[in-house]
Length: 365
Image (spheres, rainbow, N blue to C red):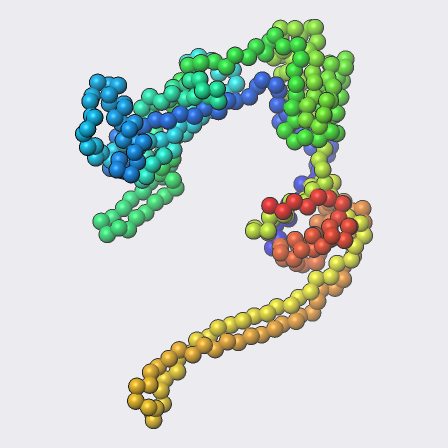
């Protein structure tokens, strides 16, 4: 059966309206990406091979020297340590000593991080400054087990782990929201109509033209005098306003899974569709051929291929007419009435588009 998802407004317009909070972002309220390089210790022989991972050995030597242990010229052969990359997100307005989650991923040939502990790891921002420091016991969601014969069982990804609240914020991102006079609202899905509707909803709520759509993405908001120094309260009220978003008529096709997603505004002109039903079936049936009673000396039993080819030219489906200007629900019902599979459905939609009868953009994933 074809998986046909119709993104239609089957509910009332009020139910279809979305909060501004769910479709847009406010200037300055955003996360910042953090990354760091560190070492995980305490592994049960599943760490990096120091002979194959030079960076792990160099990091281990450097760490021990900072702790007062001289290992220069000494051959290290431990497998209980692994070099890792540590990533995380610094939330907007995260304050000093706030804790955030981090993800730990193996960098070398470590087989598992299970049971390891991440040592102190500085977390850097895009500007190269340290914004947080991570450390703690890693939590691995998978495991790996190997027998003496070489057989191995692996579940999930044991070389990736998380540390809940594993990093402490050491530096704050400076941004003064309260002192702003102008705030930009950015739509996550650019659209001119939606941009104007957001501005109209804000102006109607405030009672004065403080918002203006600048382009399909940006709505410029002038902070009224009554909210000077209290921008957070203004944005709290605005983000709860509901509007009906608009979208471009688009059909999304995933040929690998046979998934078809149609937008609400998809329309077609009157068109007639007929789908053939030609099937070619090839069957291979190997058979054994043994030498006869009077066969020459040295004759052997061989396998002989037997190929059977059948062509079924079944009765073609009747010509179906899809009327123009129909709603999305009628379009879906008309296509399903043809009783075709997902591959044929995709071909039909592409053929309708090629004929100029499908008033929508087709995007193949």
